[in-house]
Image (tube, rainbow over all chains, first blue to last red; front, side, top):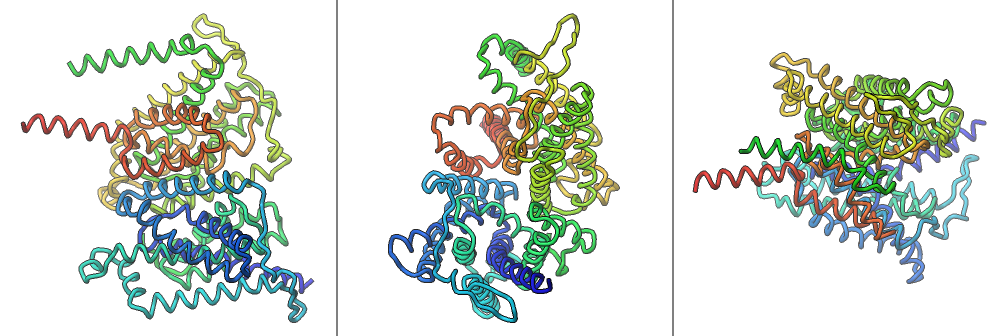
Length: 289
Length: 323
């Protein structure tokens, strides 16, 4: 009984680390470009398909394919920023939402057209290796998702806080014009932000494709949950996002296991309502509006 | 001169709208026109919330669905007439919006949009899973048609599309009139003040929360009425009609037409109901093209059709004045 609880908790943490990777990118893009990117989930979907095809066509191992997909998606992110998002920066927020919704519809249906609706699975080769630890069983694949999540978040934290580019990113997030005045190339920062966001989403997409499934419509629900993570975490805060994604992962896993699996997509919303009632300013305090 | 043009244009429009079922007697065309009218109600009411009060709601389709389900279930289980359940559909949607608004309308901008989007998802999840009530993804079949009746000597039986068409037009006219009256009243001025600068509005004594709630609840109630009409017209409803994708479709109609006008959302709804029908020829490519067109449109015409046209005309007049 207690083992089941810990098992569900572990699953929740792993799920949370996947949401975290998507939410971090969203939070960065949101903080720096002030755009809600509904298409972020589609970046994650495209990356999952890319990983799958690189593995199948080139016959390389999973991790190599994932890395290659991450690189390709970084370039993809830069192109998308330049072509789609830069023209609407500074315009009313609805424009940003609709542009990204258009991009999302475009990518999802293009994938549907090219790859058809039937879900596929990435065979990472790690799914059959099970590790037993204190009575908890976890596949190496799931453990890898957790390790990758922790590794990337530490890397991102270091990048944002200790490098010159990271400092410039924070400066643009705080005040675009002031940053520009001190000589920060804002457009370069936008491009880098999108590249970083795409890379993080790609890692999550590849892992989800291996643990769960790859399908053209996989991005849509994850992006909404990641938005909730961003709101709960209070944006601009990496710690907040990490904390909130763990909560969402746990709530979904434990709620799905103990209350009702059918309603698992509804729990994050209920959590959000609860958070508004208790802490209107966001879980981690101070939110910029 | 300008006034005369407006009058003649208005008369031509009225005659055209009334004569349309004769011009296009094919059931298929009439169906598209009826859907355009339903979408016009949805776009108008969302325009009130977004365009005038400045509150971005991404769950309009959820209230559309609540109205549809409420009215259909009352008709199916209690045998009540559409003319009664219609108002309950609107009332329930409005009350739900009022309750939700209390919670979420203190949020601003992106946060409000995302929260309402997730509320839309919640409603879809409930519609899909509360099988005892909604029959889940299977949907509700066999919704009764509106009871036949006579009106100024004309008998309506609601067996033909033309009758639904005229009823839909009546709804559009009524909702337009109400929104028009609201927008041109003190309430409308207060709403615009809130849209432009909420803090400033509050500082001059406008109870911003009350006005925001009013616009949100009333707009959502109109969506509920549109939903009731839809349910008793199609005679079958299922959760797929009321997803967040539909909410965004309605939003696109509002933006496409121009959100700070009344004609904009109606025009947007009509064009964006008819245009995608041509895209059916493109088959599977349809939504790919739609997504691409949406991106191009927003980047090139951020003010919408009516807004862009107005700006173009005002530029021309100022230019001719200075010349």
